[in-house]
Length: 450
Image (cartoon, rainbow, N blue to C red; front, side, top):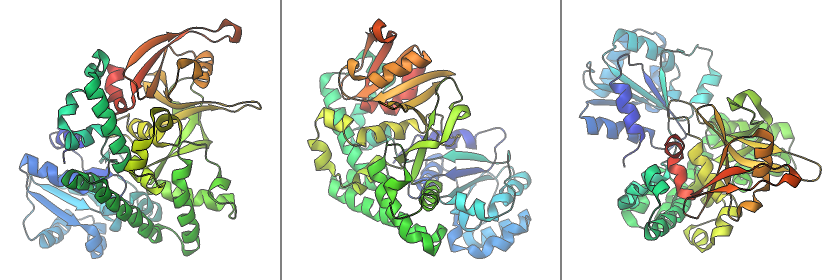
């Protein structure tokens, strides 16, 4: 299965001053497959070594002696490792001593392309005192397959409509209907490559669901690798509760009323480090970067993958298919998860996933804008909502307080633009509202840059 990130690998491999590349992401998002597919496509000799199978290499890497390290790796690979070839160190978190050694391998053998991948890398870094080779390595952050990658596998003829210019010009009704149908399928199957492959090969969402069950169990099996025995039971409770609170302000009591907030917080932090979910923090929205005004205490979770979230929440393809437009977008967290999942990687593969939202809490009522996006220094508010523009009270309040020129809404209708009239009695300004179909989230960055 082809991934957009292959282009990033190509740019890295052909770079003038190539550094070792570390792929980061949750388990089973396709990091290893990405490297193998790229090597095959480019006709490169690939030396793949899974360090989970060779923990004894810790002392070898700790020596920082390139000749010794490569001699050991050649022994495992049963082949000489030559310049111009690709050395892939998978599951590098199992031998964390290999991380600082990447710098010296690259300095002594600059013509050798070195890629590493780690699923639980944050835990390995927290347990070891060595210094990271800052500035000496590059990162590529990989998540699940997005909707456009899914469409390439399931209905490649629809890709020409899943583009910024096509959406702006107007998509034929038949193509729009097919994209919405595929979108519902994606919300059930998700973007985990193994689940997508099962769906592609069998056409059965049931087969994909069985894969999802295995993936969710794998994540739970991992708990013992980074949590204490005392935390395991609570970690299970928090993990099972996460899908029910996607898109809602995090309150520790919602995850467990019997446990102390600090213990729940610690478990959530472990799950975040494992990249099972991301924290979308509140930002004031006065300007960018949003992180300068974000609140660490006010955040809402997004699950790793919409398909896994739906599975964990008990929603299958049939249930999602039965939801009408208003229920799919306004009820539950499916649509908000879908859009947020795509906006998380808005900054590109080299930056860690990051996303913010806006929340104003008052005594009588709250106002919330689902997401805030940075477009070349401009604050862009994004809502996920069905219904008339008059129902977007929170968005109107944000436009009044922060004054951006344009806002965006995702729903299930074709793309449109309108000027929302001012309401002088409430001091609400007029503003431009661009409505986009949900599937356009996959190309939203291209839409903003068009």
